[in-house]
Amino acid sequence: MINYEQKYSVSEIAKILETNKLQLKKWTYHFKEYLSPNANPEKGIKREFTIEDVSTLGYISMYWEEEPDFENIKYGLNSNEQFESPYNKLAIETIPIFRQFSKDLIGGKVWTIGGITEINDKLSLADSYKFAGDSLVNIGIENVEIREIIYPTIYNYRHATELYLKVILPNETGHDLKKLYNKVKILLKNKFDVIPPKWFENIINAFHDFDPGGTTFRYGIKIDNDEMFIDLIHLQKMMKWFSESIHQIEKRLIFIE
Image (spheres, one colour):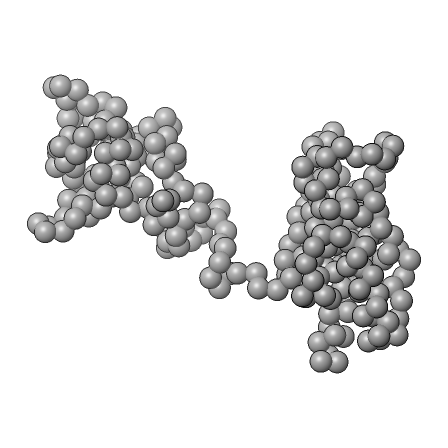
């Protein structure tokens, strides 16, 4: 099980450092001023280590000998060498991809998922995939030599399109854009007596032709069509119009409900 809290027991730290518990306790005793308070708790309380302790103990283990040079090790710890490469490698390897919230992370280059930041509606989620596509297009505009962005860009826009259609059809599943669009057309006709413009339909048909199941650009599945050119700036503009249209439709649907 992944340790999202990043609070480690003696057994866990011993395993990370590939040492035994007795040796670990010896290190925590001799270098307690460099470790978190819970690494040397009062009697009756279990030891608990932080990710910073992993760096510190990893540094100590690297310089530990049969007759250790305590002054030299402490000199390095006082200089915070334990938090620099290569000594912090063990800590970096130990840190999980997803971490439990900590005040220490505030202000850093971190983002949040879940909790109050959870995306609870398809419109916001669709917007986020469109934003990802827009960002990749902007990278491509700055450097046309970066060819690797093409498939991820189209995938993000294609997935955004699917989610936008599902904003209008919240109970629909599946990835067939044409089926989704046909139901959207019926709904718009019944609710507002309107037919979507040709450019709106063209976006859906194009994505469906090249990626009918939502897997072509995700997995790099062979495209049967002949070699085709794509203008990412034009695609970005069309997706902007498409997004704005869905937002307007969603507002009107909420208004009549």
